[in-house]
Length: 335
Image (cartoon, rainbow, N blue to C red):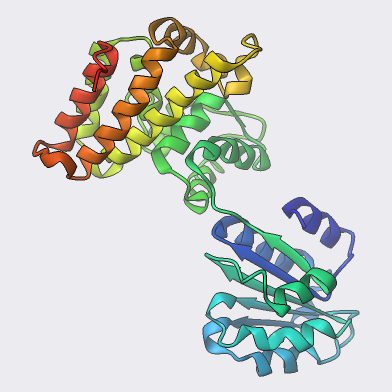
């Protein structure tokens, strides 16, 4: 089941007897759990009689089954939530219950950071009688989309470039991004825009000196701006590790590879290029033809290794970054 399907079904009071929420992306597991807790009981007084919240490391399968088999009091359903179910000992022993569940109980298993083995009888039983939700790992190139979605959920507007700035700075920790966006609750009204100025003031990300602007400077071959940004990064190295920056370079130049191979080059949005980044990207198309981009991709792999101590390089990571950026801007990319 998708995130949206589960939300929609719970809104309509359509329940399955068992749900397994699993995966590396804990943000959506937490969001679903919170939604279920907040919306399952219309009468708050019924929670005391019909809600059980357990933790995997502190409970057993037998205790979960015993609670799940109890009948609701003054309600149509009981709700049993098992948080941190990945710590539950002998989780496979839940199989008999999943195969024959109590129809008036909704059992929710929150299995974070990993999935259960899909070859097991438990998983196959859940496929037949329960609701399976898998929350996969979020990759860096997907984060900006989630920033925008989270902002929209909170009724804020945000441009793609501002989403990219937040995504590049924070990374794939969606829970932290959500907390940062919550800072705007008492700052702006619903329907207003989260601007780069607000991001700089309340999240602490510079609107001028960030990874997004560094890529734009490189695409435009603006060496002065690129080195200004790198010098800014050097003042706060923990927030700007070189491996993270090289990974962003790789993603950015991969967009150029995709462009050069595309049969339809008119729609830049298909390469995740929006209005704010259109001019630098068009500059990059002219400055970095396909043969050069291929060599840059190879160069990035070499400098990633050097940043990790291979090839005997013994210079600071920011000197290494400056060397890499200089070579890219000057197109001195021969290996």
